[in-house]
Image (cartoon, rainbow, N blue to C red; front, top):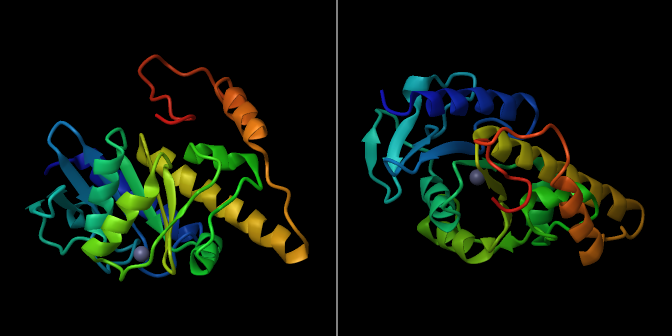
Length: 226
Ligand SMILES: [Zn+2]
């Protein structure tokens, strides 16, 4: 079976996505990418996160061809492939319909630097891609147009997509973007949020370089860009 570790990651993080309330029902989907083969492992379409096993994961190339698997792949496989083509260092993509991110996506408004953890996206403002029907090449195209340097992107009237150097990092970014969106929503509910300035965000990125445990030499540096 191809991409066994990636299949397990998709199953495990799918359960977390559901149990942490980031995706209701079968909404959202996860994928991993192996640059050596050019293959992407992606969750199946419309199967519950707690019903999905590693055998249900579908292996595809980035042109929409199924390489291995009996299930129908996630309807958003074009969108995932577009993110890997746009950010060649990305190894995992997380797509959710998490409540607060989707609220701003419905308003077609970007996430702003109301909280410093937005720095995880590598930008000071997370943009919102133009609307297109879910699961269409048009939506994937809009993602490619809007993503820029950002590792996170809102999808108009739809949800959120994030990427990262590992599934754990892409997932953590989705959790943090939901937190930023909730803080933005809550602060707008009682007044006008103060937005961190470009200089304040630059200071955050500088500080992030030395945050947390020392990294091993082969660990991906993912705090700022890739
Ligand atoms: Zn979706």
